[in-house]
Length: 346
Image (cartoon, rainbow, N blue to C red; front, side, top):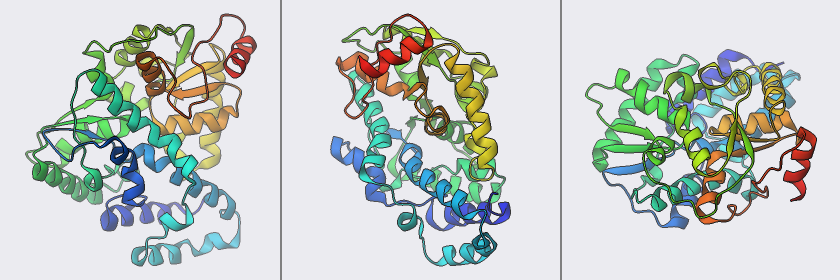
């Protein structure tokens, strides 16, 4: 049984209004990847993460807590919890992930920054001002709070003189490119996904890869932002054959993620169906959204391999898999069982 919807949405909206994110996490943790790369601060062109990938391990911890307490008498006290949350941000304490969990998702913005550099695209970064865009609160109907937050982000862009934001996930892309212009008068920042940027350039391939990968399209990328061909173009250039599951491209099947905070059981059922569709085509699958990645991995429970597209692209450019991936990207022909065995033992 999920926690009361009104209180869950209320906590998310309160956090966005008071702390600049639906799930406020320590700035040093959210920006550690950029400090390690030594990215310059600000500039006309910036990489903008919206902290989406960095938030995932915190979200997962919170979902597990919700599932644990949703069926207990403690669920009746969520209203009290919301009032306490207005005074003290407890998220970074009760949902703090391990360093290993954080590194898994920090790797993606690192990948993207390295790919852009290889393609000759110089970017800055806003560090503590790289704010979450409010995507989840917007999806759940808290438009007034999101509008105020959008004006805050637009003000940050103006402060740094940002003219172009290169995004790394579909939700941040959609909010900055399609939603903010409706909420902020005079908003004129150019927004492109890094996949679109790289597809327009000659991304150097140092090690052509091989085999088939099955693409899971993000609903937001495919349906709202028309980011469909770019990931396929990049994977083909890397050497892969691209497999298409049932319900692909603009007819893609949801990963279940958007409903997880409110309806975890329904979200799990949707994700399980998508894993089935993917596994019928192949054992090695590609995602391009942090929410898709984590939800499908949980549903798959090791039956298929799921990796972010940036991992594959970095491997094709650099000649080696990014540290910590643990999965080779060459998949041999054969049955689905043989393909999975190849990915685990190669």
